[in-house]
Length: 359
Image 1 (cartoon, rainbow, N blue to C red):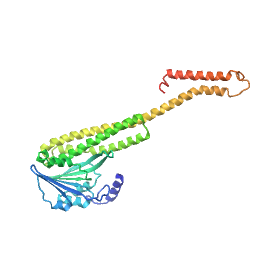
Image 2: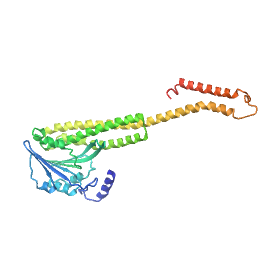
Image 3: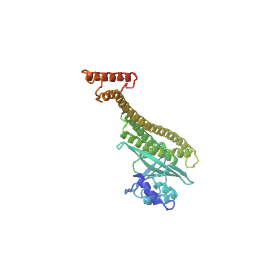
Image 4: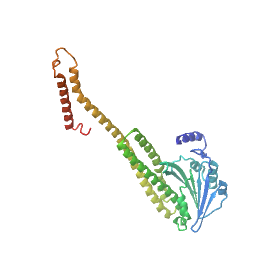
């Protein structure tokens, strides 16, 4: 579970110097996959590298060189890549820490961006989070992803098309395309959350039981993680869109501002969903209270009807010697008729007062 790895990671980090590389997350044994896609306006080449040494010896220098690493669990590989491109040790430490908050760091040589990808899996009807790190250097982009789930396959396909706009742009436009792809996945996750909220609202109105309460609590927790993953991205895109970095051209800034608008829309939707989920708790409590009040109302009416009947039965059950009507032949049926009249009168009275209108 995430909490276990986080706890273990915190213990292992105690006393270590800054920049110490320590992978967090589940233990994995598979190899890290490294791909290199180099392209210019007229040509492109793609390589699947079997190990990091091939990358270190590769001299592919095109207009744009995109290195993508799937997997961050082998520290030596990440360290060698960082050393080759002169990445600061603290940045490499953040890359292997998959609990890193989304952020932006700028230096003279490169820009480092941490983002959270939200993947929706229709088979399991669930969403999962993974960290994606992007380093932007002149003519190079290095992206680090936890899993090999072909998140950016559409971008690769666009690069390989001879008439694609992305082929005529630089690394700044490729960085925009990666960020935009991640933001597009947010819409898919929000659509799933919206459908889940609608389904829970229907269940809540029909049968507000304990299982529904558990689902609401689970959804609220899920919404908190989504908000935590997306909210900092507004500051990141806003900082890039200001155009302070020389790595981003003015032509690309307009695309970043478009992504910023999308992020604002996503955040507004998240806040709306949070309010709806919070309202579900109020609806649940109100529904349970209403049902309890209906039960108490019925029990109170029944008790109220039987109070005078109990009084009559108790009165004539005392068996005193000189009590009237004890020897009367029609005493028993008369008492029953009298009790029935009292009950009927009380029911009619309650209905006229609308106390038992639909009960």
